[in-house]
Amino acid sequence: MHQVSQLVKLFFVTEWRQKFAVQGVIIQMFTSVFLIFLSINFIEIQIWNALFWLMVLFNTMNIIARGFLSETEGKMIYYHSICKPESLILSKIIFNSVVSLFLLLVFLSVYSIVLGFKIKWIIIFIILSGLFTIGLSAVFTLVSAIAQNAGNNYILIPVLGLPLMIPLVMTTIKSSKKMFSHIIVNSVYYDLAALFLLIVMIFYLAVILYKFLWKN
Image (cartoon, rainbow, N blue to C red):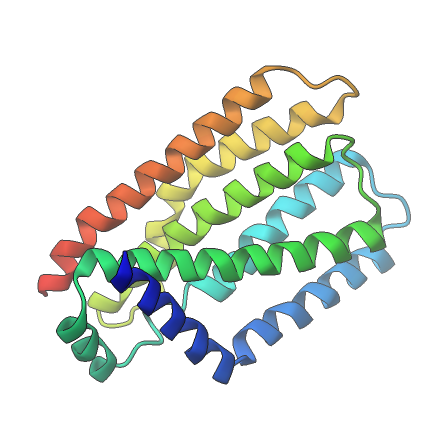
């Protein structure tokens, strides 16, 4: 865990010096929400929900997909000399998750202020959004590591990420639809537990697969 914490600190220092990617995504968020506001006079809860998850998906993908693809060969050799493969992939996932959660809070605030917050169950919806974002961060971090080993092939990111995203997306959408009513159903909590287990499985899969990528 010491290696993981040190690597996470290193990634934050590096990101702080090069804030262009995060700033670009934030500007994209404001622009997208403003365009939706100008285009739709009255937004129904189903449309509000669909647009929210769609934008969370693309915002997360834009900021996370570059994870390993932005690393030079020299940096990777340096990482090989100072840490284990599981420490590197876990630190990348944790760092990307924290950045994604920060962007989620920014986006949710702007989206709710401009378009209104249509879901009554705020806390549960925020927990669901956070779990979904962490899951996407783990998926795209793993996929970007695979794409880097394939010669920085960007087209592999959506191709490989889609099968891993489908369980996350289906569970999240199904759970969010249950929050439309004024009475929360108990199955929502089972959906949250299922989403958490999916995230644990993705973390475990990332650690196992990255050991083989590390050897290459």
